[in-house]
Length: 245
Ligand SMILES: NC(=O)c1ccc[n+]([C@@H]2O[C@H](COP(=O)([O-])OP(=O)(O)OC[C@H]3O[C@@H](n4cnc5c(N)ncnc54)[C@H](OP(=O)(O)O)[C@@H]3O)[C@@H](O)[C@H]2O)c1
Image (cartoon, rainbow, N blue to C red):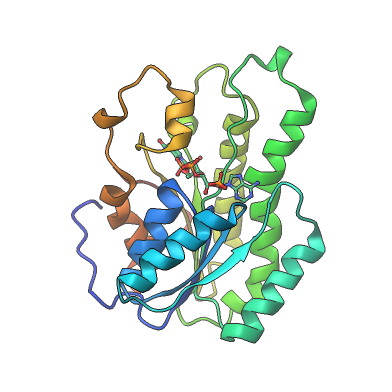
């Protein structure tokens, strides 16, 4: 998949919504999708980070993006419905949805895991992905090549202790993705998950404080699979969990 060479206009005229677009992998995906012609909608909780990505995309001469500040931890059902309405009013379409935002909270044994923290992580990593998908499905269903891409983690391939709500949420994401892929198999929507692998971001640095970040690939270098799974070339991929590295 890393050998995939996308056409320069792979995502031309497509509208793609990206969660957690202000930093790390989400920022790289937003810039990469825009560089391939997409109008990207940058959703995240820190407005100044979203504005910076917005400026980077505009300065590079790519299609003008949009910013949608939203804290997934506190968002309620109506917020998702409002978002879908705004997408419909502003763009009249949605071609792709990248569920990328995630919260890691803390690493500790389950018997010591703070229940409040558990709820918060599940809200961001799992419930938000469900609610956002449900709200966006009517628009995605109208797309010629609708794409829903969830973000999984290598923790689901090699289970390790102490990954708490984050680890459990990623198992659930895989299950939800596969269920949805099955349910939507007769539509134009393709639903897959991506495992980024170790990447140089704030989340990785927080989880592995002793690791040299320079030993890891940057988010920009793992975008081939993201582009493949977001574009028309991935018509035959559905319900798959794909390693980006
Ligand atoms: N980096 C890795 O090595 C690695 C490995 C496996 C999987 N992943 C997955 O890749 C995805 C991206 O991670 P990353 O490494 O790029 O992390 P990151 O640099 O920490 O970025 C995470 C993004 O999610 C946003 N976010 C967090 N909580 C949010 C909330 N409540 N509402 C809205 N947005 C929220 C953050 O916003 P702020 O910037 O405002 O905090 C940030 O933009 C995650 O799903 C992660 O599980 C990463």
